[in-house]
Image (cartoon, rainbow, N blue to C red; front, side, top):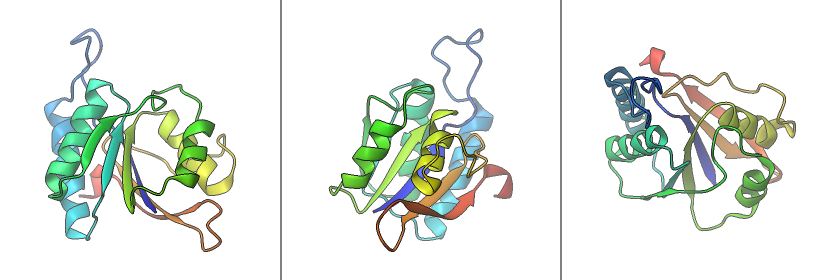
Length: 156
């Protein structure tokens, strides 16, 4: 299964709006990245997010701009400070999707990528940016993942 990890787009501060929706800048960055991903042939069969508004809005923009109709669902365990091991274990056995997008937050999304790629959640494998997308592909022996590419919004 190909795995796409995305940090939510730039959001308002909690003082501005407690729910922290995406800013116009955040929306624009996510849309640019998603359009470039679509042009590169990215297809996803499912999209999960943390349930926080900024992650949900990012997930919805991602699937809308890619032009496919996967399910977009909130999944417990994807919050900023949640443990990554349960999600990593689930991903190693997940067979429902050929390609899956997870939209979340730092530090969770960075720790998850590190655990999946090098087996150490404290290693920094990828420098995520808000609205950035990273593609992980299964290693040949199917034990873990490799980084295929990263698409930060400042490149598109």
